[in-house]
Length: 307
Length: 312
Image 1 (cartoon, chains in turn yellow, cyan):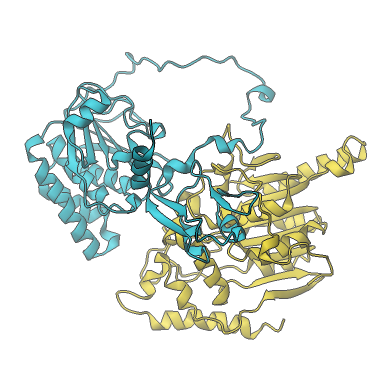
Image 2 (spheres, each protein chain N blue to C red):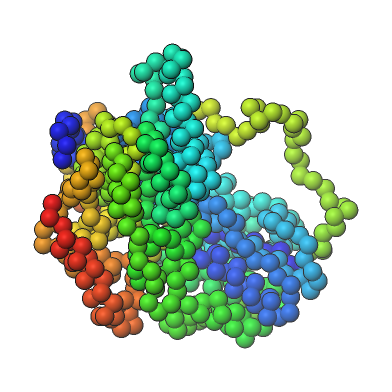
């Protein structure tokens, strides 16, 4: 980890008051909202959110907002461009002496995986290229959730989606956005999940102290799109980590470090069998070949992990 | 033209019900529109779906404000203003309601003169978002009430619409839908077509005219912080988490952190307090509570208990 002093050492140190307002239209049990509220509690009120079209656009439906600061809605591909404009405006105010340093704001992009892995990737690449001082949060529920879970660049192999209904589910493979982002050599890239709030808190505390492009991908268990009971969101999130499907890691100072290496990794099917989108792997008959392939891919990933 | 509006909760299959009924009309030679209302299709939240069917081209679009038939899959929605069950109901509107209470109780309670038909509520379930096959049941009953859909046509529409779900699921839905179709025999044709609307006679709703303003004034800008708390998402709840404080360890950092909605506050003694105005009933806290001190109870039952337990 970095040499920054973490104020949150134990679960007990997590914030006991929550900044994000209740009453949002996110689904019951939304893993994305869970991660966002945990992140927001640590980022704090001095933030301005730039939200690409997606589920979380519905967070702020006129005349209501759950945020304590400003929120701007952009088209799906252009949130990093929106963030650039806001950062520039804040910088100009700072230069003119019209904005005291203590009133400066963090510019935070908030997008789903549809925008982050797909149509917003070019604008994000450009923002990192320009070394834009911003935070990017992708809530990744592995499909276009707000429109009924069509596949996206983040959909995992074999998952059933509204547009991958065949016997073997989605034929493609989840894009490695972490590596794509890290290849730009930004200040920070990290993966988080709401089900591991302590790891998340450490990463957001780190991010707060850095400048430049700081990129976060939060795996967002999605009862609606993944087809499971909403009460299972945290159990499924933990399984994503313990089976090695969702590696918790960060890219910082030019190096990738795994913040949690699951000891005694559970078989991936422990994760897959909890979700209706993978039900065809188990019934009417077990698809041993596909399960073995999915396991082999996760094993191969961890075989290459040294730290 | 038939104008039919379905009301249910997210998860009860109202979108599917509207598609089944729409397909059945179509197979009988009607022009059809069927569509759910987009925007709030969350589990437990009030859901709307609409079907229009006519022998001639349909020029109407959008939501149905003057329905000929209103189908209510979940009677706990009736008192919820956001669900708009009674919106636009007139003397000739048929109200089909899935309930354990009788017709006259509803007529009296709602003070409506039009016909009320009850669907005997399917077996009581703890979580009403899981009411089994209620979508297909409602579609089956509605198909008989309009009186122009044959039993075989209904079955064909169900097979088509549910084809992706496998034979077992289709069979159980068919059984429930056809049973509802048969139960409604006495009321076959009770729902009558409303007249086609004329653009010339169109009377606009009672809206307020606003002057044209510059973007600075007219843009939908919210000048408030965290005012989403005005939205009572607690009404989505079909199950209620209840803390047994005698068993609570006061490890608030578990439930309060994991609650996606931030609906669990921590009081000065470190006691978690659930905000029922906003808790959507996801039950993550129930699943995660280390000493198992949070229990899931049926929301319907909890409300009944609260009402009877209170002294007036």
